[in-house]
Amino acid sequence: MQSEPPAHGDDLATASPQGEGQYFIEFRSRYALSYGHSFVIFGRLDQAGNMINPEVAGLHPASDSAVPYMLGHLVPVPAETGWSDGDLEDEYMSANWRVMLSKPEYDKVVAYIRDLQRDSPMWHAALYNCNAFVGEIASFMGYRTPFIWLKPQEFITKLRQMNGGANAIGTTRQAA
Image (cartoon, rainbow, N blue to C red; front, side, top):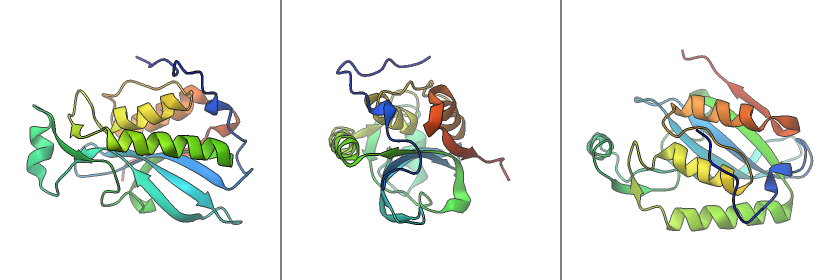
């Protein structure tokens, strides 16, 4: 199942080729004790391609306890939309896809992410999970998105494969 591109016709899917400019968004998944987690990292890169003070946005239950996570498979639970433990640690990354953006494209996407963060108060494993959150960002940018019930690693890998082209630079790691 794929979602349709946004009705407003934003053509951010034709972002600058890899290596041009300093702004990026990276769709990423990481390993976790469960089936994993998907999220986005965004910001600027230095001349060597390293992230400078990256920001993270991803949807997850608003607790360090496993109880809301388990309950969220039955009923919606309160959510957070920022960083979670392990998001910026490369050794936990299971798949990624980095897209380079111009400054105007970046500003537009970041404004959308901020709106989405403000309007995403609940998490539910089947109805509105981390993949759905990331998929909304990708769809806003004009990308096609895979089904949200995939494991996050598979979701990010399929997102990259479905949208291909010059920007399809990323990795998928084998589970350890």
